[in-house]
Image (cartoon, rainbow, N blue to C red):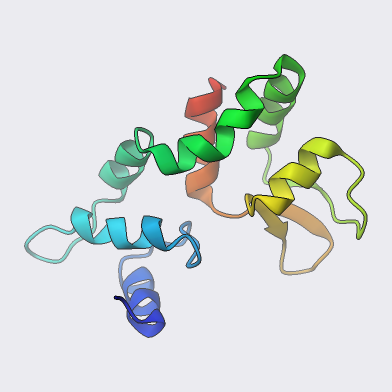
Amino acid sequence: MLLWQEVETFKKKHKIIGVPLFFSRLITQCFDFLDQDGHFHHEKYIETQQTKPFIWQLFTPFVREPHNKDRLCELLKKDVVTRFSPYLYDPLIKSLYWKNMIKKDSSGKNLVWRCELLKLVGRNIMGS
């Protein structure tokens, strides 16, 4: 089992900015992409995640409805998904938020994608 400090050190050392700590499955898989010299292969990691079920399962419910799919494709192109509101009336935004796919930005005013990895893989899954 990895300690939080070890994971954070690993992320900083290899500049893995886009992978959130609480998605521990994604972090532990990072270690599979270190070469013998300790260099992290970021591109191979992202490419491999596009075939793993974990991220696919996050997006699967949105593929079923054409309206949500089209809208989600547009949101995946944006850095800022929408303005933050304590009451999320939009069912798509609410679902993304409660699945931890989006979060408040550092200012607390906007909702943004939790990590770049979700955006990249999500674009591939949604076909955008």
